[in-house]
Length: 266
Image 1 (cartoon, rainbow, N blue to C red):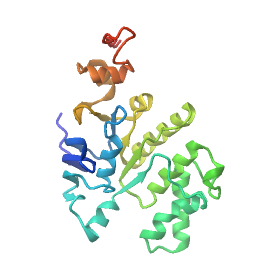
Image 2: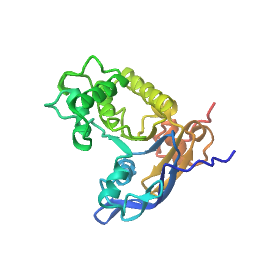
Image 3: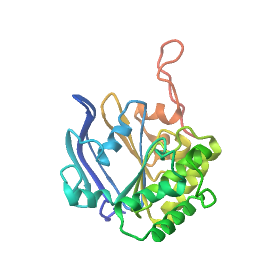
């Protein structure tokens, strides 16, 4: 059945990179409401670059990033601020302020963007930390908690203003398997209970299989999308040799220099 819902984000003909170097060229895709959408690919393919262009940290060389009918690329002033308020961001290393407690970190967006009384801001921040199972770590500094807890605190801060879209850049990077699995469960729970749309940059296959509704795969050689769809279906059915190698974790060359054949999926 065709999905008749309107996309929450539409990327149209985006070309982006650094200075004169093109990293991603003429890429288009839609992200649907409530979807866990993953951008994946090998090192240097432009995953994080694309995400940074989607959230307005960088300006693309060409193209549009539409949130509903509003283009973040051309929006200015109040219009741009209204678009940015629709989403929260968790950066790769969490980006928590080390001199502030977790509660103070989560309160920062509320301090900057709301006129609520201090008591209300505190209550909201505490509730966000409770959502990520950190209600017992409110007054701890980032240096006193684990990597997984830092990632969860960063997600709580990204949710402070109740956005309907969360961008996560390599959420599982640097985590042990248990912490990574707990983060996967948190993402699934937030998606199911709150209907949050997730846009995630990742190359962690186990997490991708567990959480992703749909993925796009970028290839640094062609600078474009080479696969899109359910990650397990791509793993099992794709005829693209690069996609096969990625999902089956196969090297491109064997010891003899000959091309390695990918295994047939069971």
